Length: 153
Image (cartoon, rainbow, N blue to C red; front, side, top):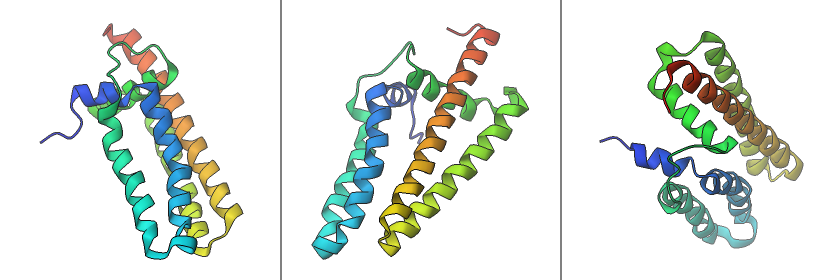
């Protein structure tokens, strides 16, 4: 069973879907931090964020012709995942570097949340979000390159 069908990729590419996934980062951090005030009840807001992330790809209408930067980025990600051998090497190198940067940000976020260190959590989130935005930018460029070189429109 394929989790990401073409229709789900199209819904995933909706700018509202992209930006609300980004909004889930601070919402998730706050939900985890709420353990200080709510105790085990913090699982409720954490669960809501997780449910939102699962449903997100189903809620927004599909984008069949990407025009916006975010949509092109998600379409570029799909191209990347389906055609890695046809992609120039410099995209792969940059992609790995941005994954590493995002993972570093995630480690800092998690450590900050474990330690309840606000500025560490925020710094990690900023690193994570910037890495993700940069990845979308690279995927958007990949989409433009791929559609111009393969004449797929």
